[in-house]
Image 1 (cartoon, rainbow, N blue to C red):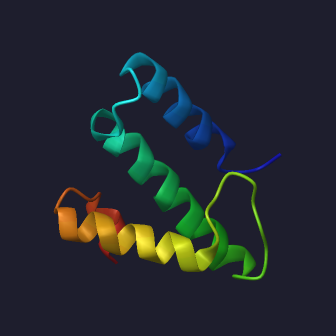
Image 2 (tube, helix red, strand yellow):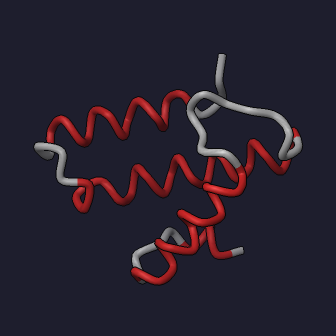
Length: 77
């Protein structure tokens, strides 16, 4: 089982409840990014997960969220 599947499913649930307004689901998106960051740190960047963006895209997405100023502080480490 993918370790980040619960977070990915939580995003889908949130988006459905919020009529697909991504701005209302930033907390659960950050939780997925945090899980994926940990996943790659523990398993290496060559490993893939169907629930996580590739390491390069994940880093890009985290940088985007930093610029927006609404990022889970744990992702700033």
